[in-house]
Length: 245
Image 1 (cartoon, rainbow, N blue to C red):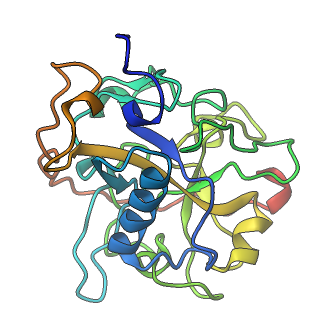
Image 2 (cartoon, helix red, strand yellow; image 1 turned 45 degrees about the horizontal axis):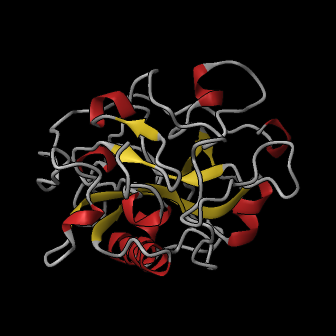
């Protein structure tokens, strides 16, 4: 890593230090992106366009959006300059570097994991393991596309610490581990070990941003990746009890 590239200005990935305070009601994708942008700006990394890693389902006239298609091309690094993934494919492979030690907040601080008090390792994603959205025929997996904070709906979450009750891939998945239990409220999210936190990725440099905010000259943000037109089907796994998470 080159001199001058360390610190929050070079950061291109973080877990939000706080949620919306309204459970999974983030104000839709736009509100979630705004939350990422505001936290990044407060940390000195507002010169990039930030996107929340969230999918939406094609329900009630809404558009299907895949989380993997809205976060840019990579590479992404945390606030300490540690590489998280080179590109979208590596991010969604077993070789990514999302762990409790690397999935830091915008302040460069670790997020509480399984076994900590409080446990906050459930990160909202609403996504399948490959980063795609659930189909319109599936039950609500995104708390009404991130607009609900009551008893209706569920949100699919991942474990940023890659830690769960078993060594099964679903249990240790960073982006698609299980559903929330009891709805979409802040209380429901806390019940399975969450706090309404998000993954945020820098999709590209904002217009007028200083070139010094790029990691290297070859790390030029070229916009969002093309959308995937994948057809997904099948039943989601059964919910487990909160103690299992």
